[in-house]
Length: 261
Image (cartoon, rainbow, N blue to C red; front, side, top):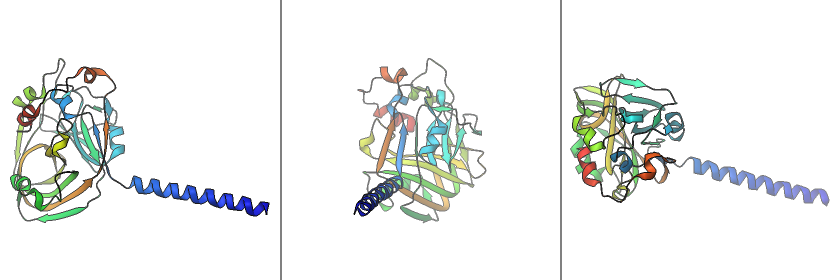
């Protein structure tokens, strides 16, 4: 009887552990949008990097952001971090470089579309044709040939840092024609105002990984779009620094519109 009793206890413990492992597995398969700092911090000129890009890649293989001192546009593609600098060139950085603002997620495609022609304006105006609701977050990945691509990249800044709206008044812009490449970015709902860029925020990297930037406009000649629905969200904030003295009571919507425009 004693052996049977011990056997029942061991069976119970084994099943409990197995159930716990199964639950953790299910949870780990749920894609999470992980974000470093908030957009209103960047608008105030808080450009000091505090989160290593090596750690950032642990949270997902696709994403966008910027680097310490606002030194260019970040494109994370298939677990590689690309830096599109203001000189128009693209660099691959080591994992110790830090970011003041970024967003990353794994891509689990929930829907996909094939296009024989798509303009950026049409993607935004016909939003409901592709996105089932404006009230969740999405990872957006577009791959194809672009008859037109218009991007920009912010130049590196030194302290004392100016506000972002001042920096983007003098930013290099680039135009490409008949270029193949990939768009990576996110859609954030309206209630994320002040936290992230609401609406579509997209970056581009060409097929040769030699040019790209923050997208201003594009025309997709042919290609595909994948959308990953992001229902889980994690926010990583700075531990001190300028962030602790920031003023987050001000509505900076107009500033962000100028920056994105």
